[in-house]
Length: 82
Image 1 (cartoon, rainbow, N blue to C red):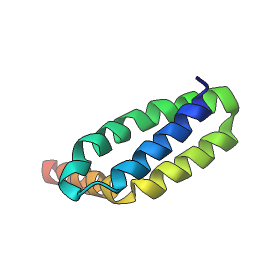
Image 2 (image 1 turned 45 degrees about the horizontal axis):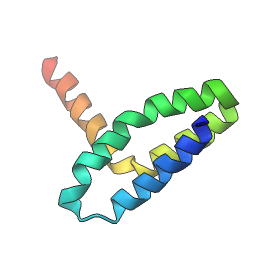
Image 3 (image 1 turned 90 degrees about the vertical axis):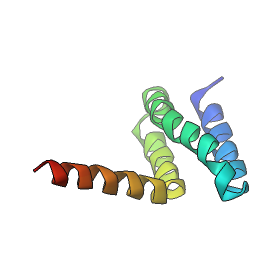
Image 4 (image 1 turned 135 degrees about the horizontal axis):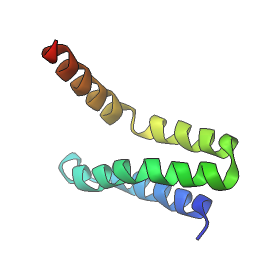
């Protein structure tokens, strides 16, 4: 399969996950969150930076709240160590 086809399947899986009740979104959402960087790198290497930019925009758009949450946790931990 090409990386763009897998990227499309990833988007469909993310959309299906969004329809689940919140308590059932955690496991598939985390799996999608962990798979995304590798898929984005593969898309970028195969099709160039423009498709990588589109994929990155879609990823950040769909996962903006979890990414903000993890960034806040990381920044809080860094601040606590100082």
